[in-house]
Image (cartoon, rainbow, N blue to C red):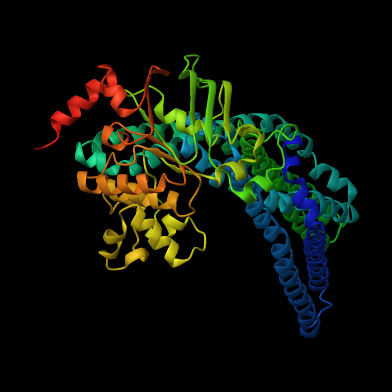
Length: 583
């Protein structure tokens, strides 16, 4: 199937193990075919009364030897074939995760986390089953089924033809049901994604749910999605639930034909009693290949539906890309360190999901060693403006320059490692404070302490029993909002980047801590380009230059003193905030 081209490279890499596994599987199937022959010889000898205890022991010993050899070969094929499916599962999950990491922020604005979780778990598990057990079932269906038919034909070809009468009907039903299975498996997987997202969202917001006493409504909401998932599964069961019983039905029809016609041929001595028993044994062996046809169809359709869903993600290109035609070799620039001059030239931006411009005609210049303050009402585009500099989003028009070089001409890694970013909503992982500051890198203790002191967080950390090794829980649940913000600030300062972007860095801290952070920012501004977004004017009042955004446009620009004297938005905000401060 075209869908399975995604996993072809992994098959090729492990082709030797797969071939060895299939050979062992075929060996097991071949050995199974000799057991009915031994039973035939034993039954014929017993009915003719030409056997003794010694000969019966020989027959029993032969069956035991075959069983031991089958067990050994079965272990080998399971190790190779099922092991290969596990390796493909690992590689495919890594490939999916790596690709998702390359996708731009705009993709995650429109994609639910639960949907991605379902792809990385349930969908990949379905592919593993289709690859592993699907390969086993397909081999058994073809090899064991064909071999069993040949042994049956060796006993009596006429009886074999009668026994195979139901086979064309099974093939027709398999083809007919396959397409319906694929559609319904796709619907089931989509609904599973909705269920995963609903449960994830409820658990993530459990504290808010409890605070507002909304446990029942959340339970009802998840129950509604769960019911939808059940209904989609029941629609699928209408197909699979009739498919497998149908297989058993036609197998039993074959058995009925064999017992009637084979019994008559045994009575008329056309075949021996041993042949009759062996023929029924081969028919029983044929039952599994007939069932396997249905199972492999089930597995392949489920796996195909999952691969289609994963391919949809893998074929989604990132919006933020490096264009080889315009990227220059920035290695030299990185070695000498970017000085950090930032220029916006007629920059405009709008989200792809909306035609409304978020930013329009933005122009400013920030020299190295200076601070730019940005204020404005909510929704004016302040946070979006900061995200354009490290290319979290790409501008719609105009250009952004760093050191007189368009940021699109930098490699993304080179650009972003020279920019420290503190987001408005601090995000922390569930590990230790050290892990959150270093972000998994090996960094000297002195640099960590220096960064935490600069963020006014060092004394707080030393107050914890485990210090930097303190486990902060999911999203830093044991920390206050201000503590989270200062850890994120420490993370941004640890590499001493030449450009520092601060999105409301004192929005969640007390006045005293805010003053300490501002002192640090003023000290850092001697050798950094700093751009600060804040609602609290105390965070930007010292800036060399301040701009006011409103509806995505710069409406005011100048120093603190100039803007206070203008009697516009900045001046009004300043006097309101000053009046709110305690004496």
